[in-house]
Amino acid sequence: MSIQLIIVCLYIAMLFGISFWVKRRADKGATEYLFAGRKLSSTLIAVNITGLAVGAASTVGVAERAFSIGMAAGWYNAAWAAGSVVMGLAAAGKLRAMQVSTIPEFFEKYYDIKGRVISAVGLVIIMCVITALQYLAGGAILSSLLPDIFSFQGGMLMSAVVFIGITLIGGLWSSGLANIVSVTLIYLGILYSCVSSVSNIGGWDVLVSKLPDAATMVDPLAGIPLVVIISWFVVMITQAITAQGPVQIACGAKDAKTARNGFLLGGLLILPVGFLCAVLGLVAKVMYPEIPVEKAAIAMPKVVMGLNPIASGLTLAALWAADVSTACTILLGAGTLFSQDIYKRFINPDVSDEKFLKISRLTIFLIGLITLWFAFNAAGILKTMIAGLSMTTALTCIFFFTVFAPGICRKSSAFWTTLVGIIGIVLWFMPGDPLAFVKPIFKEVVYFEWVVCIAVFLLVSVIDKNKIKELDVVEED
Image: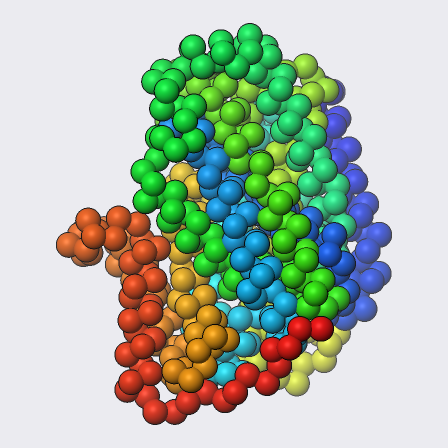
C-alpha cells in the first residue's frame, strides 16, 4: 500500500471519527443537525466559511485557470474573501438576529409564499451545481493520486461516498469540527507544495524564465480582463449574502456578534489560498506543458504527485479536504432548503421533529445522488461555478432592498425579481445566444443580472401598492 493511500485513508478515518463522535449531539433534533443548535463560536464560523469557500473552484479550479492565464486566477479567492467580509459587516449579524433559517423563509416572512417557493427552487439548483463541482475535483485528485485504483469517474464515486456519508452522520456539527482539521491541512499542504515545487524547478526566477509569455502569466493584473476580475468580486459578494451555505453558517452562530466576527476572520483565512494555488498552476505549465487545456483540472494534482510521498500524500489529502469541507456544507444547505422550505412548509407542516430529522437526512442522500449525475456532465470548474453563483443576484438584491430600503418593497417584489433573475441566467447561456445583442454591453452575466433585477424590483414597487411589513428584528445581540 502506497504512503499516499495510507495518508488519505487516515484522513478519511479521522473525518468519520469526528462525525460519529458528534452524531449523538446531531441526533437530538433537526436544529442540532442542520444548525449545530445555533451554538457555533466565531472560530467555528471562520473555519466553516473558509472550508466552504476553499473547495474545488478555489484550489483545483484556480490552478486549472492559472495553467492557461497565470497568477490573475488567484483573484477568485480574493473575491470570495471580500464576500465573507461584506457578509460579516452587512448581513451575518442581521440574519442571525432575525431568527430565520433560510433566505426563502426570510422572503415569506416579509413578502409572500410565491417568493419563498421560487427562491427555494433557485437556491437548490445553485447548491446542486456547486456540489457537483466538488465531485469533479475529487475525481481529478483521486485519479491522479492513485491511478491504478481510481479512474476519474471512480474518484468521483468515492468522493460522493465520503461527502454524503459525513454529512448524513453529523450535519453542521460534523462539518464545523471536521473543518478545523481540513482547513489546517489545506494550509499546511498547499504552502509546503508551493515552496517545494518551486524549489524543485530551481527557484522562482527559473520558473518565470521557462513560462510562455512570462510577463503576462506572473502579473496578477494581466491575463484576465479587469472587467472579469471585478465580476468575480460582484458574484462572490452577491452569493455570500444569500447562498444557503453562508446563510446556514451565520444562522448557526451563538449570536449576531459571533456571526459577524466569524465571517470577518474567515475572509482573512480565505484570501491567500488562491494565489498559492495559482503558483502551482504555473509550475504545472512548466513541468507538464503537454497537458491539453481542456484537461487542465489534473494540473495541480500532477505537480503535487511529483513531490516526495509523504508531502504529496499530505497535500493531496489537503486538496481533497477542500472538497470535503465545501461539499458537506453545500449538501447540508441543499437538504435544508428542500426539507424546511418545501417539505415542512407545504407537504407536512405538522411533522414531528424526529421525522423531520429523518426527512432531512433522506433529502441530503437523494440530492447527493442527483449531484453526482450532474458531475459527470459538468464543464470547466471555475466557469460553471461563476454561472451557478450568479443566480443569487436576485436574492441579494431583494435582501438589500428589504434591509436598507423597506419603503419601496412590495409583496410581489421577491417573486418577480427572482423569476426574472432565473430567466435572465437561462437566456444568457441558452444555445442560439438570444441575448447576443446585450452581451457586448454587459460583458459578464453578473452585471446583466444586477441591472435587470434592480430594474424589475423598482418597476414592481411602482405597479404593486401592497407594501411589506416593517422588519421586526434587526437588532444585533
